[in-house]
Amino acid sequence: MNKTFFTHRHDHKQDHNKENTMSRNTHLPRRTVLAALSLALLAPLFGHAASSIDLSPEQKGQPKGRPVPEAIKLLSKDVHFVKDKTFVVAIAGGILPLGGFASDSKTIIGADPDISRLVADGLGRKLELVNVAWADWPLGLQSGKYDAVISNVTVTEARKEKFDFSTYRKDLLGFYTKAGSKLKINEPKDTAGLKVIVGAGTNQEQILLEWNKKNEAAGLKPLQALYFDDEAVARVALQSGRADAWLGPNAIYALEAARTGKVRLAGTFSGGWPLTADIAVTTRKDSGLAAAITKIINTQIANGNYAKVLSRWGLSAEAVSESRTNPPGLPKS
Image: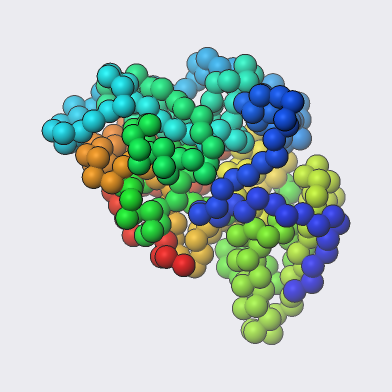
């Protein structure tokens, strides 16, 4: 496979097991840096449309739920919540649309906070969100600092030994092209001969390499991987035709596609390719919460609130038709 490096980039690895890392400014509070980063990334994504996105801490458009008696009955008799009448959820606040900071630099907003709200409402409890570092959530959850983690956590067999899961989204990677393109990318052969923007050292690059090997073995034209250090330059390359497609976590470009219409989805596939991967609400093993949470999510799927959450953040392509408790996870490596 041909590789073109405009500036070599070692992206944070966007797979299901790695921490989403980002540099810290030692002169500013962490949440202020992350809020600024979220807003800075939104600016090139949306341009003038950015003002139409609700970045307020009030989130007046956030779907609300009601207590689900059937789910509450599923709570085990010895279930223990961190706080009385409260559902405490840990989120590794980072980048929208999954979970970033509002314009006040302290309120966490995004798809994961919205899902957290629906689960808390279903339990008949007040929601309290706790911002944590990604690396800290496993120990924090096991030690009882919070009731659940709702932060783009993928189900794996290794994690199932310590945690219970209630699925709520597909773990998807997406191919995006500029609007008007007729490209459809659903399998390896569809990438033959294309110029694809991808992050160096990422899970998606590894998959792209595997796809290219299959194409070359079948006698197809190799693809060319393009690497950019500057996201704005990468977007110009896509819009100008220097690149045919961009490959990365579906959530990043899904919101842009929904808000601006400048890019379009050409195809998605599992972040665990060739296996299926699920994103799930994570709770302590045998804490007695998982069955109730699964019931609540399925209730929100049925009443339409779930679809509203994904739609407002451009993540409809990652919707599941049913929440499952502890489904098969990605195998141990």
